[in-house]
Amino acid sequence: MKEKIYFIPGLMTNEKLWKRVLPELEKDYEIIHIKIPRSTNFDEINRILCEQIKDEKINLLGFSLGGYIASYFTIKFPQRVKKLFMLSATPAKTSDLELARRKEKLEFAKVNNEISLDLQKAKTLVEEQNIDDLDLLQTIVEMFNEMGKDEFISQLESTFYRVDLSKELKELKVPVTMFYSSDDRLLDKEAIVKLENEKHNINLIKRVGSSHNISLEFPNELIINIKKWMDN
Image (cartoon, rainbow, N blue to C red; front, side, top):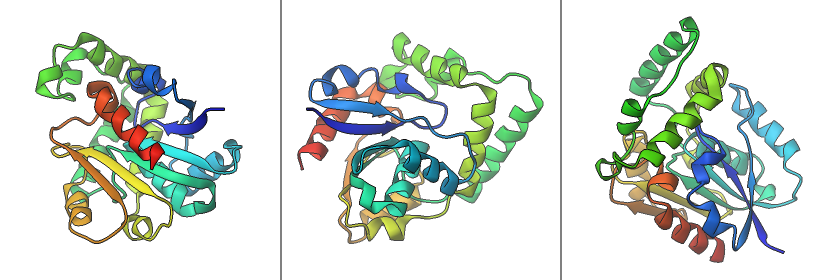
């Protein structure tokens, strides 16, 4: 029987986020996909997940917002988690600057009937070397547009209520790995630098680059690190 890994996507992403890593990972593991519950309250989100997840103890991997949710779940229910992998995610609260930017986006979304992403915008979300990868860009666009306005409002608003989980994360007895890009502009740089300069048992793996959607842009790097995490 293959060991299971539970995957949580991020803001306005779905199972397509993993399409370039699944063919290789599914040779060795059973991948279980979890949707982010529609709520702006992280306690409620994690209560719902705790009820949905039937396995007694799991390997949990979360991307971006999903990585924050996965860390919250692990801190709240450490007895339910074997090991935690945070991809392109930090345990930090949303910065004041980012909060202001997101509130503008939320107000825009509320007064517009439809919100969508196009290929030109998607190009700004990937590394320079990948801007001509049409399948990559279309996947990012499709995920966003499939999720829809209501999901966008709920997920975006939830990020207003993030609290800093760094202290609790560092105190976990559960093995924790964080894999991220050095120049990912969507990550809280202060939180990353702080973790890089403190003593703890979190396994920090930093790749050089700006990619946020690592699973789509650099799938082989992620596959290698997931296998190392599972073998540890």
